[in-house]
Image (cartoon, helix red, strand yellow):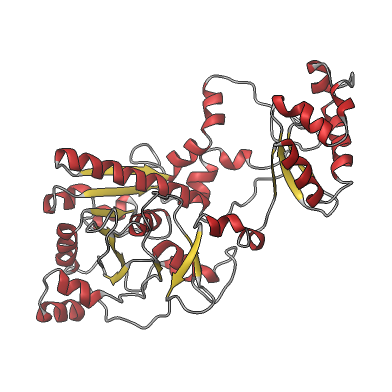
Length: 408
């Protein structure tokens, strides 16, 4: 793979599964890195996530392409004794190795940093775990629902008062963690440019979850008084709430103190500013349900199109709550290259979501479909210097399967 981009010539081996590690590799690939995705002979389970509820069901393997576009694909059975010869050549070839195998299994496979760094001291070994490298739960497997959402405290806070914890959107914690892992990788690459030294870098779903929840976690660290879970009928602050328009569109409204007068005038109720129930801070807190009920009635009287005009005129922060089908038609996404064409996937999958980083003046590599299982085995093995006889031996031992014609 050749391109003229920021990471042109950067060689990445992605041994990770599911989302966080592979998506960090996708960001590198968007800026020109040559990424080899290495998976077991049966394939990464994320290949069939489009058939695993609660992910939306589709014929197209959209989760797989999202997390593995632009990559070359290898299938390698790391449990096979001869696979270590291939692993050694891959590590010597690579600038970056991304791993997320739980540490007990990693030790058995001889995939720990200490096992491979001797082959390539300049290697950036990027390690993503569920709960971090130390502590009583360091060896536990972690998914974003457990490590990022539940353990971090986020899941206890992202719900309304009286409601049970909900099930977050699949991959939301993983994709946030992917950006963190990417940042660690490029930080280490910058250090290598200055010192010539490789490094082991790491993050965890737990660390990223706590970082995302850090305003509340930091508050807990200093004994702050919490208001409890959000109750939209009795909010801690009526200027930060979710409201419903006449056409049943929900919208978020955030009114900073300097905008109160403008908003009260714009909605036709400047009298609320001088109403004795709300003009005194102590009384306002006591009468928050009454103010909320008044605003509910006001906002339910007109459709969302009306409130767009009103709030835009007052230059206040607001936004309609949208579902996925509405989001994909948002003109902001195309205008800012958030959604981009995807080449070669087939079926209905013609577009994908770009990584959230842009470098002005640098065009990202055009997005290309993810690889089939073992699609580039022969090509990569030859590139690594293995002979035809050696490659036949890997096939015979089962370390490398023959390429299969899987659509995904």
